[in-house]
Length: 421
Image (cartoon, rainbow, N blue to C red; front, side, top):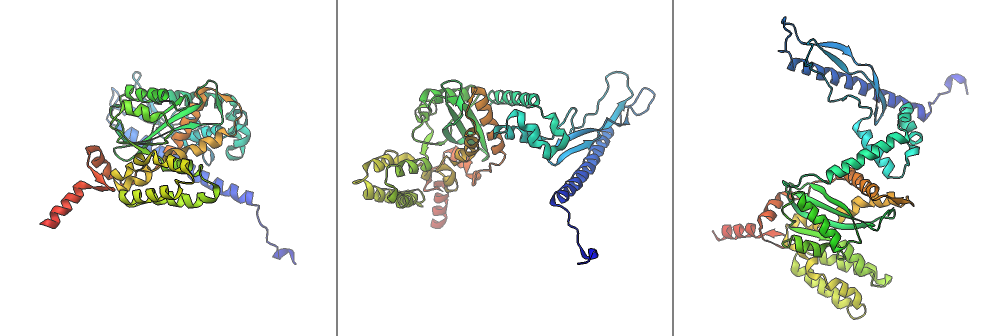
């Protein structure tokens, strides 16, 4: 084969670097344009400000020294425009909202760093881990910097823990006690979690505290703390595992709250009391109960399950029977809300990541470190939580509209009146 016919292929690494360079160049140009527009808007807003001799008080004055900003696509060199105020006193300063003073990392990187730590990267490994992504700028991420960030996360958690809830109204709660492999420094080895849905259908982390084995006293302390923060109303429905001391606590603090047992936990508890050879069939039959279209159909499927297994496996059927009423509470609420109301999945899916992180940790964490870790991971997950399907029906739930088999009785009455007319 002639040398002229040989085709030279670039290594994938070179192509990847080329793409990154193009992206960084484009980002730098767009950012520079945005900064120029921002300073023009600022100068226009102060165009009427004059000096004693009638000149414009504010003028452009070149740029601040170029500095690198760490972003998700690497380090970008930025020059922020500078403005000079001719007035000798009470000077007006221009501070970019896009690139604030002393900013060294973009928000995406600020969120990325705690997640790396919380998912297993130790403080001393950040530089080596991030050098391929950030280049020389990763040298700024020393153990001391990461420790200062951890302190900032702890302060953020403490501030969140004291926030004002006087204007909040949560319609549904999901509650659970999460046991982590990583050990706390004291006896409180359980993290109590409450996630709620507000009047607009937005899911939100409401409470996050340590507790002692999900006891009633621990849950009482958590709920009373929410009240001290200004929370006036309890949820219309609370969803949780049957083993919680939460139910006794909520009964005393918010007696009007309806109870809904989690079908995910209940199914696992029932199947655990059956031989493995029957578990697949029993799971399908339990599924038939909570997927029934009406309460009547659900009770029929419930009775069928009891009839099949009560004689040979009484412990399994007793486990199911003891919570019969509170397993079917969701039928008294809008059908659009049945799926999230039947399980504590909002908590389970979020804490799968938390458990994954703590399985890697053999040592003992401080109480604050555990809570901060969980708080930051929940914050990250909360950004991906979608609004409750059928959130428009929440107003009816708050007003106390009666629902039968997921259908509003007001709607039914209107249809009957229309048909009669």
